[in-house]
Length: 124
Image (cartoon, rainbow, N blue to C red; front, side):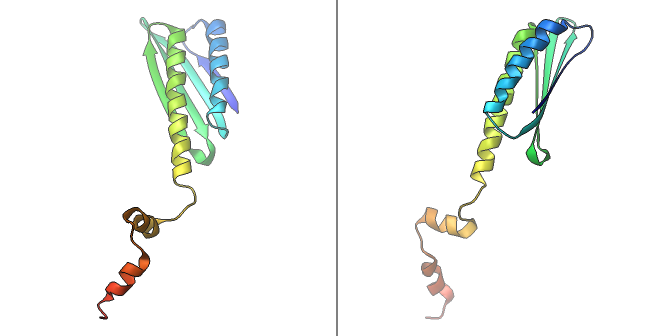
């Protein structure tokens, strides 16, 4: 997992970078196949913004952005947002993997059997 933390516009780099580094490492427990994490900190007027970009396998990118008055709170909020996105992404992968497809699943949900439809050809 490649981690990149960037602070723009003469930002308080050491404290914020170290804090962000600690928080970002915890994202690995939500999804194992993270290839790259980028965090960009910026300050406009009195608002601190934290932008996160997470690249996972198969070229999928998850993006989050948060603005807050406190830079450490902005990091916490964007990390929380990315945790939720990773969990949803992982659930989507599990839901679409394996199992029966299409009409077989629908027939089971309805409680019907394929033979119920084979007899309905009109060959009575």
